[in-house]
Length: 311
Image (tube, rainbow, N blue to C red):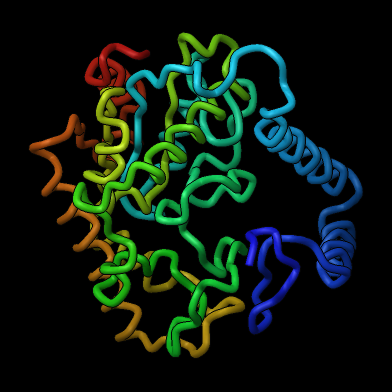
């Protein structure tokens, strides 16, 4: 089944559009109109149109004249890893302001959405081992098995003990075909969004890659990849995760408080355990989100200096 199928799985939308999708969008627009007023509705519509335009730039790469993706050199890509809700959004959006940076949906002139390639639905050619599918992201396909407890919810559950064998990847899992497709996606992103592809730096914040660092690094070994491991007080993060709404469509049952605590602790522990195990073999910088909030300028300068003076 293709990733653009119109089928549905137990009330979870898979990619594509059906009449029910459009009715839902119309209802959402009416609710926004009455709740926020016409000005905010127009602003939201403008944001959505701009996002669609950005996504089309990537999809239309095969139609463009000029350099081809295979001609693009990937230069020292930067991957911000950690856990969902670990403070990475504000940090990565700060980095997106640099004129040489490109990411899954744009560059410094468009930097407010979709900075995580593992959930960018317009990157339809991203290899499946690098995609995080979840009811949370509305990108479930027929190939995804419904769990009796968690349904189709995988964020931030991909790192719990039960799911970790499915999502963790190491250097032993490297495959030439997946490697070639992954590199080509990055090349297409650079070609689509960089003002000067020869000087562009690719930056990404896919938390799934936290449990796949050797795998990602192995596919980009000749490009000198850099990893920025963002940490956050585990008590704060686990509390946030325990109270996070995981009962959206696709979650079969409500989780008890004890289940939520166990999931949060397992996800945090497994993510940072595996990331730190990779520290000795990869170029990795550890940054505390609390330090960035306290003094963002010094942290950004430290990142730039460590990542081969890319800022």
